[in-house]
Length: 176
Image (cartoon, rainbow, N blue to C red; front, top):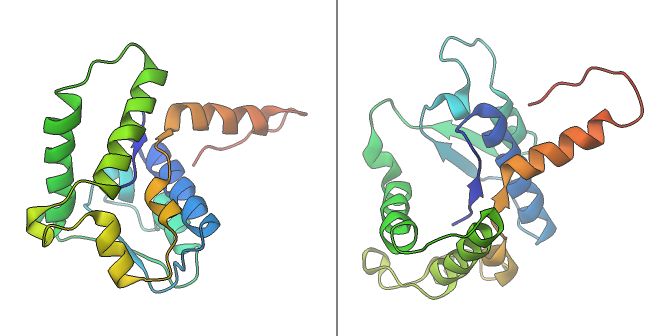
C-alpha cells in the first residue's frame, strides 16, 4: 500500500502521485517494465471522458517503457476488490480510531499505519500473509524499502514543484 494525501481528488494530484511512486519504486530497484497500473475510470485518472488523448496520469505511467495504465470496465468495482478492501480497512483501523493534532501529526501516523499494514498486518483473504510477504514471493529480489516508501503530502509536493518552476523568470508554466 502506498499513500498520497491531498486537499482534493484531481488529475493534478493523481499525476503527482504517479510521478512520486514511479520515482520511489525505481530508486529502490523495482523493474517497472511489464507492469500494469490499474485504476477505475475516475476523472482523477483519465481526465475528461470525452478526451481524445491520454491523460497526464496515463502519460506519466506509460513514460516508463513497458508500464501500462489500464482502467477497469465502468461500474465493475469487483475488479478493484483489493483497493476497495484497503479503503475499508484504513477507514476502520486508522481514520476512525486516530486523532490528529495537525497535518504533520497526520502524516506521521499515516506512515506508522502504512508500515504496520505492509509489514505486519496479515490478511485472511490473502492466505494470512502481509503485502510484503506476497510481494516477496512474486519478486524475491525486491528490497523491503519498497514496503517503506513514505506517504506523500501531495499539496506540499505541488507547492514545492511550483516554487521550483517559478524561480528565475517570467515564464508561464503548466501544472500536470
